[in-house]
Length: 89
Image 1 (cartoon, rainbow, N blue to C red):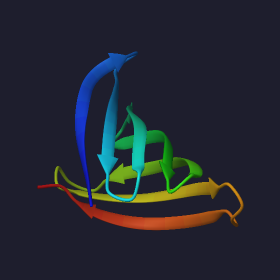
Image 2: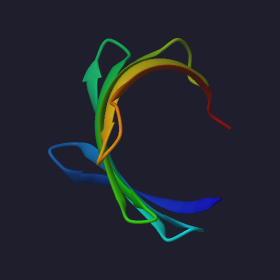
Image 3: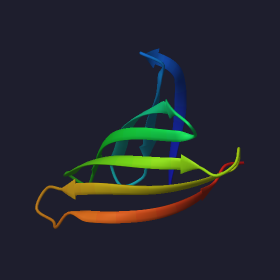
Image 4: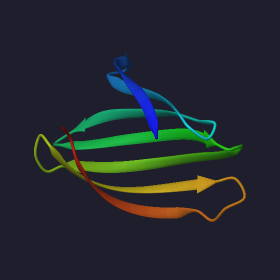
C-alpha cells in the first residue's frame, strides 16, 4: 500500500509523482505527454533496500483508459518487460 501526490508541470511540461508506502518503500515517477495520446515515463523506487528503475511508453485509448509497455530493472534481480492496462478514476 502506498500513497502519492502528483506535482503538475514540474519541468518542461512533465508531471512528477512522489509516493511513500509500507515496507520502507518510496518512489519518484516523471511522466511527459509526447503528443498524439502518447506518454513517456521514467521511474525510480526503493523497497526494502532494493533499488528499482524503469521506463515506460503509454498510449491513452480514452480519457480514462491507458495501455502501456515498460521495462524495469531491480538491483540483484532480473529485468522485466511489462504490459499494463490502466483505468483512471
